Image 1 (cartoon, rainbow, N blue to C red):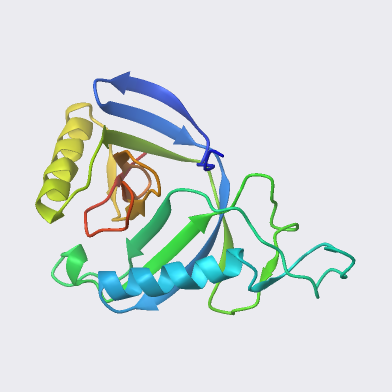
Image 2 (cartoon, helix red, strand yellow):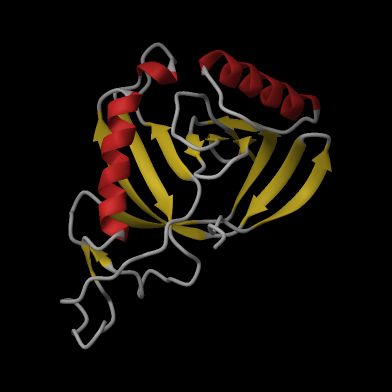
Length: 202
């Protein structure tokens, strides 16, 4: 069964680059202190626990009343890791991170189960525009930095205004993309690894 991903329309496409308009979505997010590896692992487990049943359903399930039942939510891609505090402008040195999963489009804020853990927050995200650089394979820090610079250069040559805001996106299927949107984001294949993110185009 295919893994659901956020919906978007392609406004422009040239070679490996795209300008995408993403539709509004809802995320389940949490904030974690620490380095990228420890924070991303802790944040992933926290949000995964929420979608796998650490919640209170907004509807009745198997005869149990709303509020007392637990509900399983389908996994989506990508998982986003975003530095919240930078040291000397180096994202790898950040000591606080936001991790979020996108919720399946079948849900609204009213129908999503309520998190049991108060550290898990549900939030609506408005429609955003991103520049995207697609690539395949795993990435390391050097490759990610090179791809980031390539995408920044492409957007600047086309006179897009960039709003710098780093993000890492991890996909759970092969293939990846580096994207610039109202945030700097980046997607890798198979496993969460240390690599740079996207920039928002407005």
